Structure formats: C-alpha cells, structure tokens
Length: 352
Image (cartoon, helix red, strand yellow):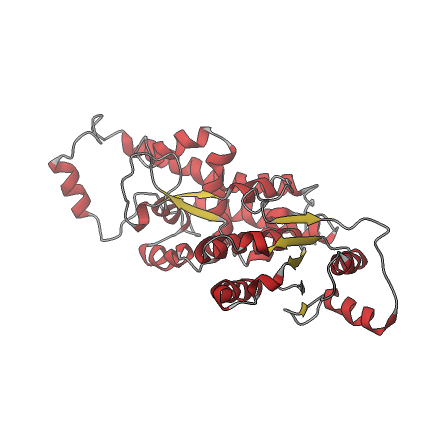
C-alpha cells in the first residue's frame, strides 16, 4: 500500500492568505474564459443600447438564470477548485497543529464565519489588495463603473443554482456575521444610483484588511476613546483570596460574561489591578473612556461600541471601561442599555 502524502504546513499567515486568494483567482480565471467565449457572438455596441434580440434572449432564459457559468462539484472545473480547497485545508490543519498562527482561519473562528463567507470576503478583498482586479471585476460584470464585487457577482461565483443563490442571500443580512461585525460594508457607486439588493457594491472594512496583513495598529475610528495596552513586566500583584478570585475571572474557559467592578477612591489603583491580571494571563487590556464615548448620540455610540468590541476580539483583549459612573443618571439610561447589549457579545471578562 502507498502511504498517503503528508500535507506541507503553511509557513506563516501570509502564505495561508495567499493560498485562499489563489483559489478565488482560479474561480475568476474560469469565469473570464466563459465571458470571452460568450463575447464572440455579442454586438460590440452592447451596453450602449438594448436590442430586441437581447430582450428575447433574456426572456428565453429561466427565471433566476445566472450570467455566470456554474461550476458544479461534478464538473472538471468544480473538481479542480475543490481539490485546491482540500489541499489548503490539509495544509492549514498541519500548520495549526504545529502552532503556526493563521489569521484568516483565526478570523473565521473569532467571528463565526463558514467557508462560504470566507470566500465571499476574499472575493470582495481582491480589488483592495490588487488594483488590477478593479478592471477584471468591471469586465466580468460588463460595466466599467462596477470595479468592486456586487452581491449578485458573489452569488454567481459561489452558488451552483438559483435556489442556492436565494438561500445564500441570508449571508448579506444585517445580522449575518460579515455585516454584524462590520467585516464587509455596502456602498453606493460614484453615480449615486440606488441599486436593488443584488446590485449592492461590497468592500471589506479597511481595519480587517490591515489585520489580515498582520497590521495590529488600532482601528482609527475607535482611537479617540480607547487604547490597547500590553502589560509590561513589573506590574504583577499577588496575595490573598480576593486576588485569586479576581484572577479566576481572566482564566480561559470561565463562563462569560463576568464583570469585575473595581471601585475605590480617585487614582489608578483599579487600572493597575486590571493590568496585573492581564499580565498574569498574558492578555492585553483595552481601555475604553466612556466619558468621551457617551458624548455621541445613542446610535453613534452603539456603532462605536461594536467596533470597540470587534477590536477586543481581534486582540483577545480584556476591556477596562473607565468612567462607568457616567451611566448612573436617568438621562444616560439609553446609553447604558446599548453598552450592556454590546458587551454581552464578548466572551471575555470586563473590568469597570
């Protein structure tokens, strides 16, 4: 019997990201071949006017017919793409077994993304990583103004049938992980026209792209009210049952969320305790200045908190919310309710 080949692990996170992109590039190259074949019989002025023949051709197609070629699992192209994905998964497993950090896989785990959603994110990311793909996407969508992926473009590339395309539209809802965590965003074209749902343009959040490229600089949109601190040596504390009970809050595997309210006279004693606990468990501290954040209206405050929570998740950081007393008035109750709802999304302890 021949021994099964052992997958070569990815050497680093960037190699894993590029392998995922290579799978998407292969899918796009196959689509380009189909477009070139179809274009041979088309009017060179197509797009400038709508002919009777084009209308007849559109109506002759079944409802929901995709303008993109369908690569089923049984097709030769489908088998090629599946083989690439299987090899990528095997190399990923070996890399993770060897303790190599792979940020794309980590992003999926942190925010609950499945493979379809990861492919969607990578499709939308290509023009942000390589400007050539602005022209490629415009070509594939037969529209020089569409330099980014649309919902319909993603559905056409990743779905085998019209029922699958309908079912997959759930991934573009407000509470779907890609949009709930602001990993992707919709935006309007430069002409300002409002497109129907499938025509919405998509792009990844700039912070997510930078994080995948191993950039750990904080999100500029939350920098005004938060700061990431990596505890330095020398801030350790110890002693007593109270300390051990506090330390248990930070220990992995606890039943989250748990809240530690560090109350005392003015000063930084509470902050030093939080730093010491993070140091003990090798986790950064994300301080949030609530007095500044609550100057925003409730909707803006809620959007800001979502980004702060996302930042904490990306860094596996523990939030330390300063000026919690700002909520202790009837006037600030809506802000307090928004604050409580957002922090429940964290599977981490919280210092107040």
